[in-house]
Image 1: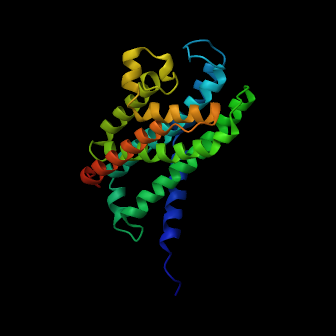
Image 2 (image 1 turned 180 degrees about the vertical axis):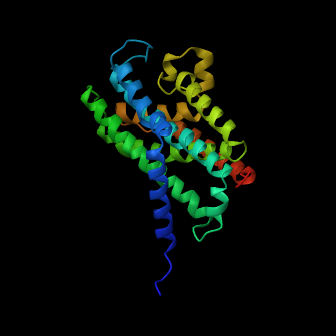
Image 3 (image 1 turned 120 degrees about the vertical axis):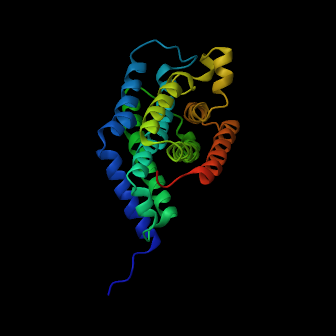
Length: 248
């Protein structure tokens, strides 16, 4: 009789399943990769909106990389989790040896895998378009990748655990659009008007984009941006842990 799978094996198997599901879903693939890629190409070949001082492509790529994290960690995960909850998939998997913690770890690892793929594609296209990142900032950018993933996955679970699947679908897509336009992602806060810049300054989207721009433009660590991201991650995790419902 074979031995039962270890917890690590179960989590990795679930992560592979989650990754395959995310990549096979046309709508989520559109939001996670096709739209960010279109945004990058559009920014590279136009002069509007203004991105502030500096080489346009160097300002655009970090913002699009931040958009990739938001797309994969928040929008895609919120929608997938909302429908998994609706169809009792979460409740079923939570009672298996995988357990609820294993399920959440599987989702987190799958999200990171999608983001690595996004960054490779967007980064490669950005380099082809003339992007010149500070390589010394890559370790800093990876810190923001992990912190941003945590914050936005926690926000996704918070949303998906409270509303019905149709509501999650509508709100997740609406939030994606609002953060894209007003959240300091594509357009840096320094290029926004005073009121909008102040509001965006406390959002996790702007914190992630600011941290990535500082890292890739000058190899600088933006400590305030990281603190804002961590604060959002902590608060969203605590609230989601208290309010998340595993089935409708």
